[in-house]
Amino acid sequence: MLNTDDACRYQEEDQEELSPGQVSFHCEDYPHLLEFSEFISGVHIDSLKFKLMTFQQRLAAQSFWAAENYGGSEANCAKHLKEVYGPKWYQITSVSEHMQPIRIYCEYILILEHKRQWDKRKKSAKLLEVVND
Image (cartoon, rainbow, N blue to C red; front, top):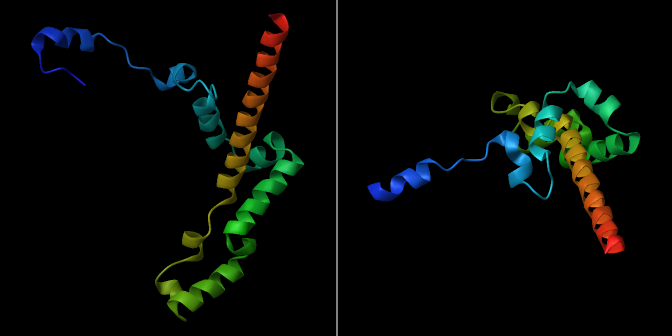
C-alpha cells in the first residue's frame, strides 16, 4: 500500500513483492506446495491415481470420497434428491451438482503426503543438528 506522504512514497514503491515462483520464501513450512498443487491439478486423473498414488493412497481417497458423496452411489444421491426436492427433482438440480469428483480427494491425499514428507525431512534435519552440536 502506498503512503499518502509524497516524501515516503519512493521507499514503498521500490520494495519487491514475492511472486508465486518464490513460494519457498513465503511458505516456509511446506516449500514448493503451490508448485506441487499446480502440477497435480494439471495431471490426467488416470496418471494421478495409478502413477502418482500408492494403492493405500487410492483407497484413502476413495474412502473419503464415498464418505462425503452418498457412499459413492449416484442412485443414493438421486434417492436423496427425490426426498428433498420431490419427484421432479431433476428439473431443479442434478446429481453432478451434489457429488464431488474423486479428483479433489486424490489431490488432497497427495498434498497431505507432500506435507508429511516435509515434516519428516524437518524432523530428521533437527536430529542431525542436535547430533552435530
